[in-house]
Length: 145
Image 1: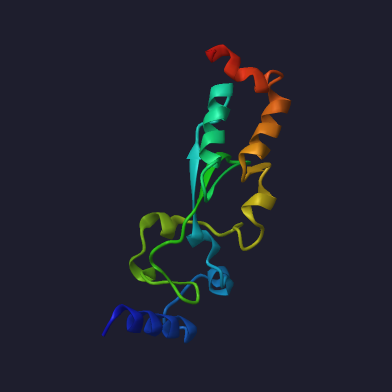
Image 2: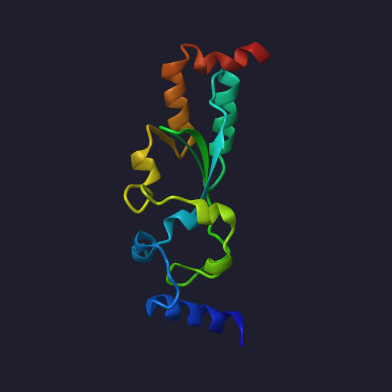
């Protein structure tokens, strides 16, 4: 028996109700929460802080957002245990962070981009925000010359 056979068996077991998955999660075919990591970051305050965020959001699959819980680095990356059909291949032995995840309000209800106060997917979006926040944002490099 190989991993692909095990995956097919698990998908069938979930479909047949033999493996219990939370109600909302069982309706989510995209497994949205398993396709990214949201890492809380310190609240940016200075030009240097925001310049660092601009560097981060300049990388593929990296976004920055702020919501009611604070500022986050959003990394788009699929969990290696996600099976075809959006089923967790290690559901019964999944990590504690997965078990503790609350889906009371999750991306199934509304995307992070839509639910956030601020969402930056590109450096220019962040620069536009910073130009409003800091009067001399575009002159920040003059200090180093």
